[in-house]
Each structure stands twice: as C-alpha cells, then as structure tokens.
Amino acid sequence: MTEADRRSRATEAFFGRRKGKPLRERQLHHLETVLPALKLDLSVPAPADLASLFPDAPAQVRLEIGFGGGEHLIHRALETPRTGFIGVEPFVNSMAKLVGRIEETGVRNIRLYDDDATVLLDWLPEGSLDRIDLLYPDPWPKRKHWKRRFVSKVNLDRFARVLKPGGLFAFASDIDTYVNWTLVHCAAHPAFEWTAENAADWLTPFAGWPGTRYEAKARREGRASAYLTFRRL
Image 1 (cartoon, rainbow, N blue to C red):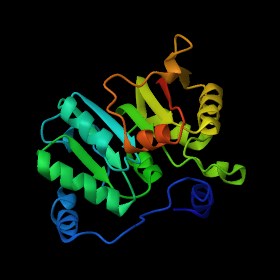
Image 2: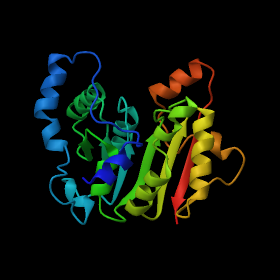
Image 3: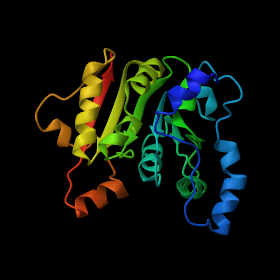
C-alpha cells in the first residue's frame, strides 16, 4: 500500500479488528475451526465469478458490511439459498456469534471477512455484486467525526465499481443526520439513483425485513428508522 493509499484510508470508517468481552470456549472453538473454512483469502486474486466461492454456485451474490449480531445476514441466507452472501464484520464477538449460528443451521451460502470492508471492496472484481447492504452503520454522530462515516464519495465509488448495472445499495439507519447525509451523497453521485416512488417509501422496511437488535433499540428509545434503496445506473 502506498503512502497516498494510507492517507486515503485514514478517513475511512473501518479500522481493523475489535474485541469486546471475553469469548466463551465454544465461541473460540468456532473461530478456530469453522471460520477458516468460510473466510475469504484476499492474498490471492478474486475469482472472476464470485459464485465459485460457494459450494452450490449461487445465482446472485450480496455483500453485507458490518453485520453486527448477524441476525439479518443469517435470515437472508436461509430465506434465499440460491443467493450467495458475503458478510464483513471486524468485531470479533459479532463474528463469533454469527459463526456459531452458521454451525447450528448448516447454512452453506455465506462467506466471511473479518477486517476492513474497504480492502474487500478493492479486492472484488468489477461488476460482481447484485446488492450491498449497509444496515445501521456506526453513525459517528459528532459533526467533527462525520468524515469517518462509511458512506462517502470514495466508498460510493467502490460500490459503483463492484455493483452490476441495476444492482442495489440498501441503507438503513435511525439517525436523521446520517439518513440525510446518505441521501445527499448518493444524489450527488452519478452512478446511483434513489428508487423511492412515494413519500412513504423511505419509512417502509425492505421486503422480507426481519428487523435487527439495533432497530429494536432505536424504537425503544423513540427513534424511527429509514430504509433507503439506491440503484446502480
């Protein structure tokens, strides 16, 4: 990575692996024995066809950035077994939780990456994804930290490169300033258009939406959520 690359990444939102409370023995076992078989190896070139990353050659491939507890990712993978899912999460405890659920359910259409999502985006082939989900990302609520939000011109450029024409970028948040921020940034980007058709669209959850613990917390605290979908032109 060049010095210019390092300076560029200094303003991006993912900063490597993080860890919270100590993991239980079973969680450690899952990370040691299950994760290696699911984790993408970015030291080798990405395959031209991402379907080859999965044992059952899915018809579509989706990426979820920052999957948290993994409730949404595991729900979607079980709901649509003919879609391949790549989940990115640098928080070790969240990764351990999802890997445990994968082991329990036997789901076969998930692949994982446990570090910086921007590195993965740069590794992926051009026009290789059908959808990108960014759900309840860190809002960086203080104005001085807004530059760290994952939605940015440079990351929308990354999204535009890896999404197929007609592919979707789905964003959900309960933070008004981040919702407005995302609308402004996507409106200014020539590769994306907002798919809303009426005034209620942005308050209507995505089709098949299972909800997340972050969404439940927001509702308990009196905050409404917005659900935005943008199409790659």
